[in-house]
View 1 (cartoon, rainbow, N blue to C red):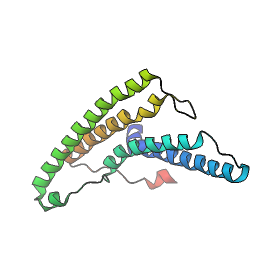
View 2: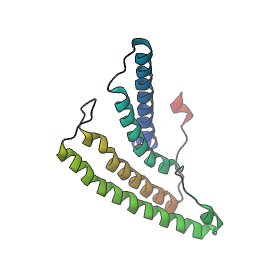
View 3: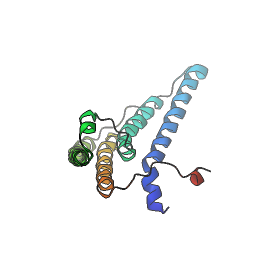
View 4: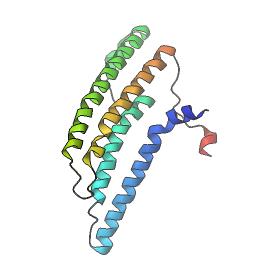
Length: 168
């Protein structure tokens, strides 16, 4: 497996794992500080919240890639196989358009926040860095939707399982 395939297979999962571990460590540290020292960290809950927001937007592309995105497909399942595939591709094209529009529209929001110079209350991080995940997440979702269309048209399977040799 070449590096591009490895990157494609685990890009979101690695970042989501780091964010989850980071949230867990930060919140556990916050609990210990309150319980043992009696004082809380001013920045801990804010940083954990930002990690959570980032994980939400990154998970959109991840769920599209592995095919776990929430959708109601009762009517699709009632269609004949050929028509179902066409309808799924059309819905995926619609998803690409929607995610691309949301990515494009959110860029102006990030620019306005950057121009405003707003910083976070506890950590004083520029807020545009927090908001930057919105266009990145939707762009990644759009890219993963295009990838999904490609796999459907070419009848290729998405490789979602880990190689046993990689996990050892």
